Length: 67
Image 1: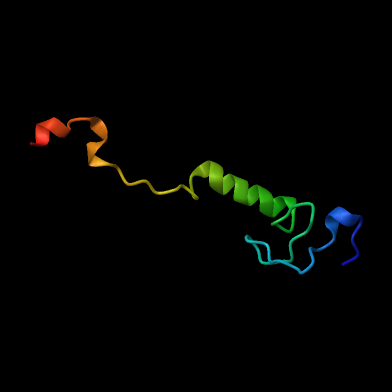
Image 2: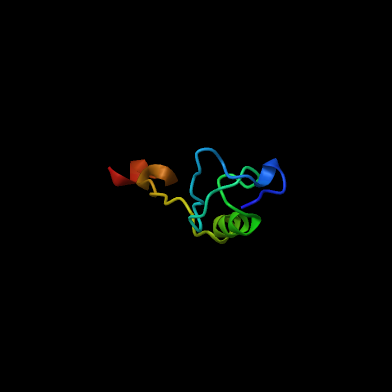
């Protein structure tokens, strides 16, 4: 690969893109390209990477009703 500028050169040591596995570049770190960065962003927006939440039974404030 002949980089056009420093932003397109692979990172040292090369890290794998978390989407496709190709070496990441400085410009799109930790991804290899804008395409992979956009795929990851879409996964966040669509809820694929949602953080699971456990509901607390005491959250509603009705603790006195359970006694």
